[in-house]
Amino acid sequence: MQKDPVFEPLKFERLSEGEQNRRSEEFAGRMLRRRSVRHFSREPAPIALIKRAIRVAGSAPSGANQQPWTFVVVSDPDLKRKMRIAAEAEEKESYERRMSQEWLDALAPLGTDWQKPHIEDAPVIIVVFRQAYGIRLDSAAGEERRYRHYYSEESVGIAVGFLLAALHISGLATLTHTPSPMKFLSEILDRPANERAFVLIPVGYPAEDANVPAISKKPLEDIMVWP
Ligand code: IYR
Image (cartoon, rainbow, N blue to C red):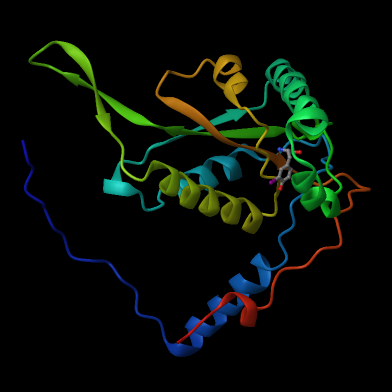
């Protein structure tokens, strides 16, 4: 049962060149200052900012507009504690046994290890889940059916980019953390079978004494090719 498309006029605001430059510079100036933060203060984060950032993430383009994502916002200290304990158990195993020397060498400049106090310190942890497939009620058959999701990895990746940008612009610090494997997150957060944990994002304010590795980004000339 193929649906006919319904169109509506595009709402597009054409900006003056001056305004384009002003906004572009302001956004770039702010985004270029984003850093991944691993030391969080326990100060609470304004929930209105978190919700607005998730609305922005949910506006991301996705394969067939299927929006194959769920953002689980965790502020409950017991849940955060459970997640930290489980993440550290997996990470300890990874750092001590599963990761290759090549991988450990690549990570060395970041100074990371298996300890993840930020999962408890940050006031909010957003766990992003990717819906590997969708589920809908087939009313004729009276049962739930699975349907395919297209490009769900790419779609969720784009939404996470929107989310990180929105949180950063709101003055909040974030970290993209991917403990591996992440199955424990489905269990602790009681997620359905079609959802796979994609990334765990501590959100909040940096600790007073937070530091970050002195690393840099590649210059434009190294990342852009314009044949
Ligand atoms: N998941 C581990 C290891 C790790 C892997 C990569 I690739 C990083 O960029 C950073 C860390 C951890 O979170 O420590």
